Amino acid sequence: MRILVTGGAGFIGSHLCDRLLGDGHEVIAMDNLSTGNVRNISHLAGHERFHFIKHDVTHYIYVPGPVDAVLHLASLPSPVDYLNQPIQTLKVGALGTHKTLGLALAKGARYLLASTSEVYGDPLVHPQSEDYWGNVNPVGPRGVYDESKRFAEALVMAYHRHHGVDTRIVRIFNTYGPRMRADDGRVVPNFICQALRREPLTVYDDGARTRSFCYVDDMVEGMVRLLFSSQTEPLNMGNPQEMTVLEFAHKVLQVTGSPSEIKFVHPTDERTQDDPKVRCPDISRAKNRLGWSPKISLDEGLRKTAAYFEEYLERP
Ligand code: UDP
Image (cartoon, helix red, strand yellow):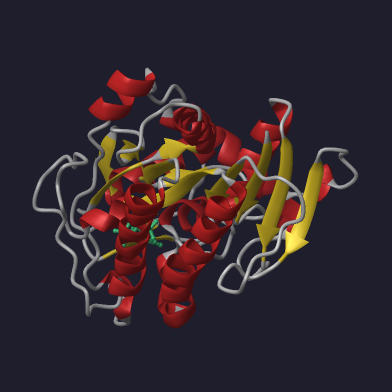
């Protein structure tokens, strides 16, 4: 297949490009390099089935030749990024999804939207299953991300129902691994880089909020299975092993063997406003329909991620 991956120079997007090329497909990565980085795809330069187009998906998209699938991953998924660039975040979710769906319709391509667990907001149902409609504050600081993805899901379903586009929606829960940005502000790169630099780990508030962390290879495997399935309903993907942020900090210290201390900090900016108190995916649907569940343990995934950041911090 000839596959377009938007956000192809980003964290999950670049791993997806690797996987699709490995499976024998032709891949066109598209990225405006605002938060993505050519470093993530530089090893693919010169590959005969790989192409890169530097482009902002909020503008009209032109791709010459046939396209069999469009995977829309372009997004600003880190709270720090979407709080700094709220309007661009809304545009990528709304205009970017519109443009990429229009391309899929014109080319007769299958379409996959990378959605998010943030569509559940600060959830009142726990763990979250796909039939829960969520608890999002539309006018809060996180609303720019959450609502852009909720709008994107609605637009995907409209193209599916109205135009018959063959669509997929994956709701991605916290995912981590090599090629995350060291400075993207999320808890995994923050804690690992702090541990490696022997700086205190910054646990926000009391560290009692919960998350569950999925290694990127598991996520990519799930997304590929979804793309080649016939599932048009949204599917949760993530690792259901839930822990508090404080427990996660201790796990990072244990895996890295770091002497760092844990420091409780109370951000006064918007970072923790509407921050979901709990988050854990119910992955029954992905298990039953795709036979998918995560395989890589947190210890193993964190070791691989720490090895990446160790090298990165030496040669940024
Ligand atoms: N967090 C933290 N210290 C940090 C960064 C994040 O305690 O240095 C917390 C954050 O408040 C949230 C959780 O870790 O409760 C996960 O945050 P992240 O930014 O990774 O993503 P989110 O799951 O909120 O989208």
